Length: 241
Image (cartoon, rainbow, N blue to C red; front, side):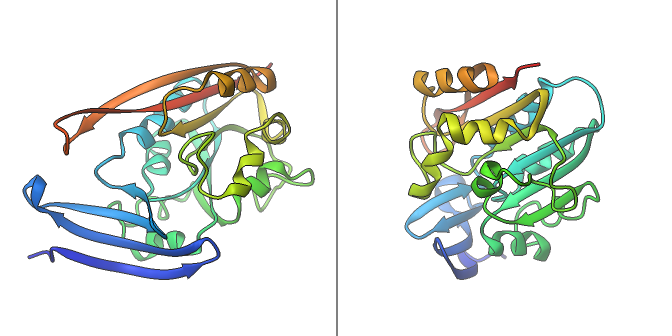
């Protein structure tokens, strides 16, 4: 019989205290919910994963061919990474996560997906700051081959391009920041970004300037608390080529 509430892990990090919680929600008939909380903010819930999954599916659907090399920025509960690995055209996946406890939770099987992501031989976990790697002029995302270009970068870290998890992340959402990222993607490759906010025209114009073309997909998903639907935005930008 599951506990009504259980804190599976709690650790201090440079960004604040982070915890992984599991609870039975009485409003949903006792449905088991996993949540990640950083400080006073809820980062992710296992109730709302449709947007994370769609980020992977839309990003990969925009690419042709096999032997795709993919980077995911932000691990969380692992739903974006897991959706990437479901695609047989993916040759390799590098997941960049700044919070080491989150990687540890996956190795220990504490998340709903247990060890599904870390046990896939195509997947490499990297404990690093995605934004530092994206802006680096001397290397990229692959710790073995830092100069290697990738076919897709899928990012789910901040709440939106204008609502950041940490203030210093804001520099990425600029021409200079995005150009640093674009330099690490093959011509014709894709940059995908999840956002909790409606599409922002200014950010779409920025993507068009740096990558060549972009589009914003508004994705609706069921909200069991309201009985209706909620939405998120998936931005996709294709590098010129």
